[in-house]
Image: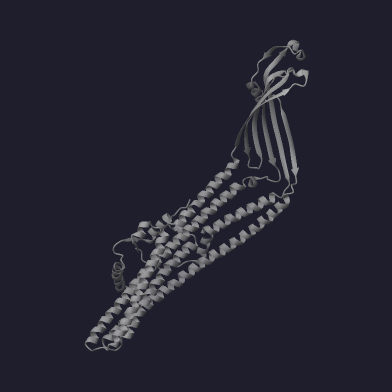
Length: 515
């Protein structure tokens, strides 16, 4: 870390630098966590990805609709006329009226079968003779059950679409978490890079000021004849180079600001007004140890990409099970039970002889009577049977089975590749933490030594034991040492952010719950 003297210098230059860059008019000061919160709320990539779990949830609802009961209503009516072709028909033109209507309730069951309960009714009226009941009402209550016993049998087969939709929902949720983890890391990366760009600007500004002070000192000494004019040329060259470095540092700040602003997706007013982002957090160096095995174990159970891959394998295993089932022959069980009811106007003939053709009266009946008789189950009828089939399409289902097996093998290889990549990222992050921790210590020592060398060289210059060339050179070395120390501290913080992302703990560490 920087000592108190250098820290006070940097703070002064920090304030001066921001005002010189135009930061004094419109600025917004943000902490790292505020930037992360803003990005999670406004980032466009997150906004896009947020819709995928919603779409997957709708797919589950749609898949479950397959098991919702179906209610059918039907109605039909017809009237026919035909010329009589037999004297027993009783009229020159035979007229018949017929209408029917039914109501059915059909339910698919989880074993792959179907249940249906229906009530069918009809009405018939004719002017033909020798009718015992006319008009006639008929009703039939019917129960049907079909159940596959081999092909298409089982909970997994019948609920395939639901299971796949549920897996897709979990996959989309894990993918959404992956986007959140990536966004959080991108914010940290952009934020700390902006911090480094600003601190690097301060260092360059301080180095420029040192060069200008030395140039002013040389100019006075040349005027009084203590130095040769060539010494001014050397100092002016160095100042010009450092002014060019300042311009480059300013451009880097603006570039880092644009990257952070883009991730945060701040409103248009921020960009149009020229408002600048001031990081309020400083990169801290707190040496901490990390257990490689512990973070590897955490990554294997916490990374959302691994969870998504596992769910994808479950879907592929289901597809293989379904494909294997489709290779079986069809064996379907059928069972039906029905009971009819008949009612209507009973025609009374003279002496109960319909061949007389003389109608002496009618006994009224109604449609309700036929429905009542049907529900009483007065007439029991049933049928049961099985159907065995060997469709030629089984040739193609074998191809589907081979395809499903290959896709499952492919997913398992992808899982292993994803797992290895995850462990590699964790190892890289741990290695970066250890390396950057040592870099911070090394550059801290290098910066202290550069400060001492410059101080010693300045003392030698005052007594005439050295030249401006060496002073300028040591100034440049000190500026580089300070920049490298700051960069090492920033890289150390980014290494921890990288480890947090690699282990999938970014959300948990911030108590962010994703539903």
